Image 1 (cartoon, helix red, strand yellow):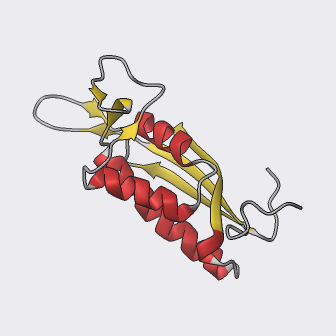
Image 2: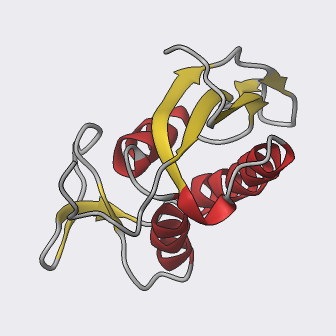
Image 3: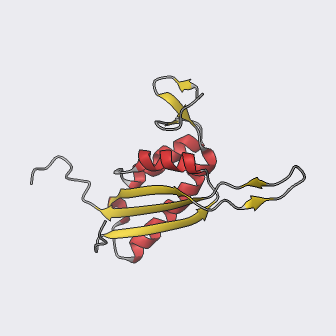
Length: 145
């Protein structure tokens, strides 16, 4: 994806959030306005509305009206912090924060660092996240060109 003047990009490196939940959240928020994505994640944190899952659904119970769904609270908190940061990046570039749409969202597995403790060593979950937002006119959604 080529970088243009009406885009802002964020790289989150080695974030301590689950890679599986990050992949699902990225699939959910892609091509949505930042305000709507923020509202969806905040509802999941408040346990008002779960996030529907499509990929990692083995042995996962269904929620009424949604099918397989879950409340990934810590991953949603991490993404809300990323939204704050990318809005600051966009504002610094002179973009209107109210018209931002997430055009690219990708989560990758990062290096797994060791945790030490009494029960032996275990590995941490770490994730790289890349988000790109673009300023689009959201008011004239149905207007013809």
